[in-house]
View (tube, rainbow, N blue to C red):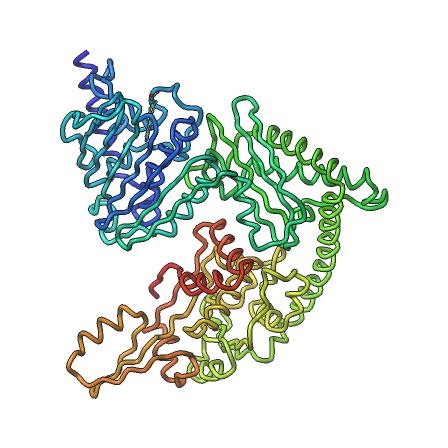
Length: 633
Ligand code: 0RA
């Protein structure tokens, strides 16, 4: 018995140390993403309680010192002494790897924790952590430092015995994570919104004490509310189709609604986690929709015998849907790639969607007609787009000789050494042309706003002159026929004014690249230039600053001196030399590399940006458009 205990203790210590030595293996790194991961890991456990029907409220608080509290009104982590280990179950949960929510093996239907490392990994990576459990009419508490208990579980008070729950507070360890990391309210809020959508009946409250703000997510309608939310600015073609069924202990839920939009908004969840890379649940839903629509269209004369079936692409346009599965043993492709692999799920989801959607079409012939007409239009548009694209591709083969007239090309021919500046407006384009190093820097001025690509179809976009110039300057083609090998410049740099119009144009360009040239982003070729916001001059020298914070710092530094402060609203206000010095000279400039950390999030951002009514769109552009990762060159 004692031996066993000692052996277990050693195991525990080794486990905690392993996590601290290789945090990457357990929480994916030591950056801001991993930091958010810690919070998700803790909240996942409370969500598990909610999924088990034992918890309705989850409160998350970000404290001023960047510690975080997660509190739920679940059953409370058991605190009784584990007979084999001779210590409290709470301590086992908090200090043993993989002993998270599933520790007693029975209490749980499914586990939300995708990564399954459990709260013990969070504990190990925390400078300090405290867990308070209300259970059996008592308040229990245990504290830890870097994972190690600072004493046994203590009873610190009494409560009515119906009052139960778990409260965990932890402070990330600054010797493991970058010490100046700071939680992003928006990122956490986004995740909790999704969790609340797919966990009907749970209320998730997020409060930020650093800068008093809070938000509560509660969706009575679950994923039906989610679909209504996604379609809030679109015109639905019919009421939301909802189905829910449990097959072989797998909970399956879908909500489906077609709209008049051209894009698709489909999200798949497995155990409340947004499976960005899809998987068997998504495939099951998609193939069912295509099959049901084709069957109905044939049977009711929308498709003639000599006409071919609608394709998956045709039935996707304007589709908004959520598929959410709760699986007792989810298999994922890998730790980071979020893709559900359980093969049986595809069959089950297909079954549920086929039954529900076929019934819906039978019972609602006018909705059925609207959906099928939408799909037929989409098929025709796709056909037209294919023709238009072929034309562009054929033409761009010729146009490798005939580059757009307004492109000021560089003399270097090796793409690895060259850069293309996409510049807003003719006057800034003029300054850039004069200021550049023409040996390796090419300039493409764009006039006015390029098309809003979200709202328009491919065939229309391709007829836009600005877009045409961009495509032929890059040389890659677009969409399915995009080829990175033909990229004519390895750095493609968007350079726009530091004002609202500038950020709008930047966003439009990002949308275009995201939708039609994604490999360009994936391979790190797309950048955003950083023109200065201010020029601050004293009698002795002039300096440029790029952020408000920098400006404040410099003004403090120069206190007492006589200064002139110039705010640059547009690139056009700089002369060619200044533009070169501040924004284009590789020696001094800062470029931000555009990354797609999370394709779904990016998609949502574009979706919201382009799909939304004007006020939220403006706010979003102003706060997030430049939110890309910093890169030193
Ligand atoms: C194991 C067993 C039971 C509940 C929990 C763990 C539990 C874990 C966490 C983590 C955060 N909040 C939590 N709430 C509960 C079931 C205990 C029972 O049957 O009463």
